[in-house]
Length: 79
Image (cartoon, rainbow, N blue to C red; front, side, top):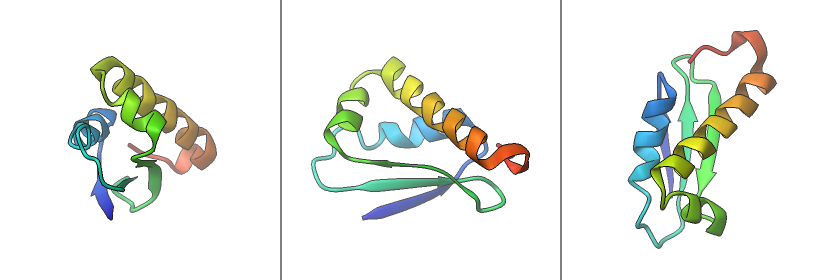
């Protein structure tokens, strides 16, 4: 299952990911900005599920992914 979210900030990504914390089935969450540009994706792999156990680790994971997205997308990126 792939869930798609349009977000306007890092806190929204963190909020949505927390919903997956106790899931045991396969999942993927794609996050887009208002211009429908893909920001980042997360899957229910072992590392992601481990990091979802802690609010601090979840937030760190999100900020790491958004930093990568900003570098890849350049100045066109607006979140």
